[in-house]
Image (cartoon, rainbow, N blue to C red; front, side, top):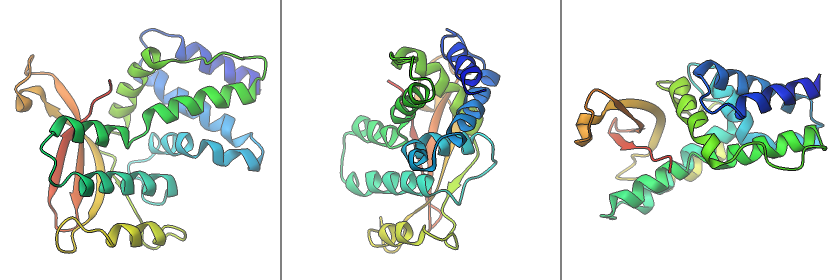
Length: 212
């Protein structure tokens, strides 16, 4: 069964133009492989497991890995409060989602599951269309932190100790689509995937994502 799953994943990743359904299936298959790993190895794929979960739910609020991503995004905002280089801020916000790390974890997962496979099965060029479909799948599915969830209190405490202004902190993250015309880009009818950060005082921070 494990080899069959690996081969299905390889076929999807070798497709030059995967569909949204292909990408959804890719993360479903990846989760199945992670579940078959020894418990001592599963933590090595926590980020990939998080994205597998995010593709299946309308919201995420009980994920330790998701909470860490929200904390990273909050830190980017804190560290760049006075930065006039908006391109750098966009790059840092995009990097906080760790899509490249998820790609590396898929490669490692396949190599662990099938040791005869030595070379990585997906590279940056092949991964980009996967990420685009992933963004579409998780679009409008917010990421939050459930304060009642055991193990997440420490993350909330760290965030609360470095507020953006007053006591305001980043409370929710979501992927949204914004018309290109908002950013003066053409063709205007197309969209750009953006991060929408909502703070505890209801301020919304919207930044376009870069996949370069």
